[in-house]
Length: 420
Image (cartoon, rainbow, N blue to C red; front, side):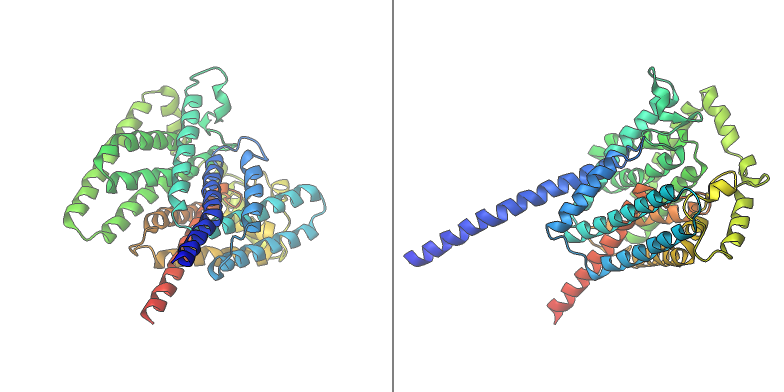
């Protein structure tokens, strides 16, 4: 008995001596992960604090034994081939080689960040909630900055605007608006599924984000938010079988629409807002349909890319034409060549298809997969009129979807083993 008690005490000491530090390190690691997601909402200049923190934590996590599964390895393969195309495109550049090299280095960093997010989510799915909560906090804060800047609420507030459009703590309104969509969906999902006691806080947060999206005056962000909101409600109605719950979703969705419309009507009382809205609601702007406008550049660019299998190099397109590509697919052709284009198409299709397969499974990570998949789908659509290949939050979405897919496949393997 004495020997048994001694063995038990020794086991306890080993648990306290090994597991406690590991648990503490995991807790700290999850906190730093969430802080990294939070910093993705503040990119006024580059390199931003997000890059510095992410480089450090990605290196530390993998040195500490973070594993890449077969599923996450598939994502890594797509992104490696994609960036290999970018490196090859550097060989055809005649000027600004240094700028092109930095551009591809950023692409490789963002690719590794997506793989990192997928791996840490697969390692522990509870980190998804932390990540989304951090994203919501960053989105509300940067949205408040954009709103205050738009209305010149304090001296120097115009730093949070660009061309009379709210941009928050971003360099561009067209990135600021889409960044707010996933957190807005997360709050909407909470309003539709959680207890009503927390509804007032979620409603206030949602109104702040919607107003930020509106004041960004980004037509892509407006369209994506409308599309994503409808998709969220539609998928939830498909998933939930209870008639009472479906009625709750319909009623709360209508109430949310009324609140959002009321907030926008109030905002439109400002002459500045109404004038800019009347300008931005034109479907085709002068810089879209004019000579060498967005759509003509797309046509010429695709024809030119057919003769350039290695691409023309990063940042070269804007030296030939008045502006950048403003099309993710064309960007992949010009900057990453045919190899990069095929890889990007393959990754996009695989991400959408794999996420869709598991979209309605009753899992702890299902709400996060649903929100990320809908938002990613929206980004894929607006990629026809805007470049998304260097948006930090876009790679967070990719990592979330692939991480959830990896969780589902591991869950299926464990079920098969139990049945066997």
